[in-house]
Length: 122
Image (cartoon, rainbow, N blue to C red):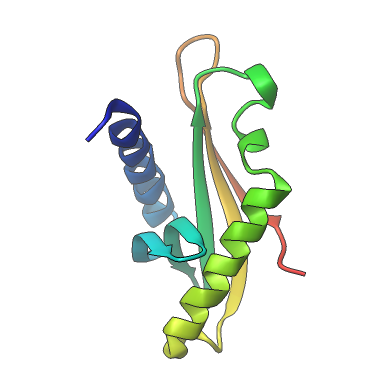
């Protein structure tokens, strides 16, 4: 496994643990289908959350949140709809698209910013 993949899995695990401590229940990690991939699928009360995790070392190029442009959002939405079609028991739940941003600051700390409803399926 290459360095970037290991680093990505490390921050996804950090994000998962952060969200579990806040009461979310993990459904699956790294869900893949022909449309794309979703880092975390979790249940927040009765809402099914599709969560994109992004880490960046610097604010350069707009920081971590800019790494989820509209094209990436559309891929996540398509993938989420495929997930819902595949998992009929989840189809009646409300769905939400969140971003969990881990942005390293100038002190070397990496605070977590959980953005609920980061984008919407229209």
